[in-house]
Amino acid sequence: MTRLLAIFLVLAALVVVPFLVWGDWFETAFSLERTVESLRAAGSWAWLAGAGLLVADLFLPIPGTVVMSALGLIYGWLIGGVVAALGWIASGMLAYWLCRLLGRRVARYLAGEKGLAEGGRIFRAESGGWLVAMSRWMPVLPEVVACLAGLHRMPFGRFAGALCAGSVPMGFAFAWIGHAGAERPALALILSAGVPPLIWGAFQLLQHRGFFSD
Image (cartoon, rainbow, N blue to C red):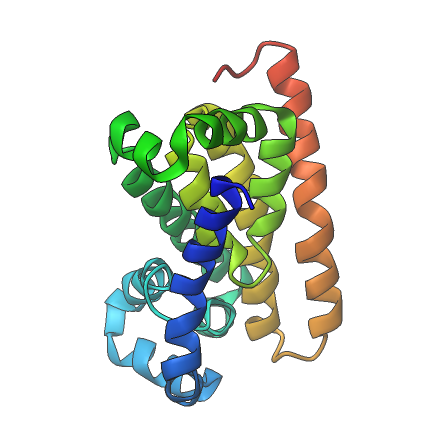
């Protein structure tokens, strides 16, 4: 087992353990009905409360998809989608920068010289962008992958593009579920899974043509 895999498992455990311990309570407390009620209680600041919950999902087992759906129910698919996407992006950014700011010395201590080089190759290659983009709609992986990207100093431009490619369709898809009354969740799930590769592929094409740089 490489140290990179060991770090992945440790980060995954940090995400999973709180869910195993408090998951039932959070699922009950954050049912769609209760989440909508709580956000509406925040009045004109409901959008900020919703975005804050999505960022807090980095540390707590908050069902992010329920929060996104609640935002769609309250604000509609467009505004709710924008807020949901921004909150999901902010969560990934926070994870990335918290781990990146640990510094090379700490990263080298955690991953080892070989592990740091191995992780750097993964996240600096095009496959790293695909990994970040696709992880945003999977359980556990969003937090873990964003942390690993920061730890291994994935170029920020590439990370930000991949993060947005995965987070934007995710936010809009689940806001649409809430807005539509969850009548067609299967279609929204298909869109949230299928659109990120298209967006990231377009970003890669523009990057290769010089529109973006790392």
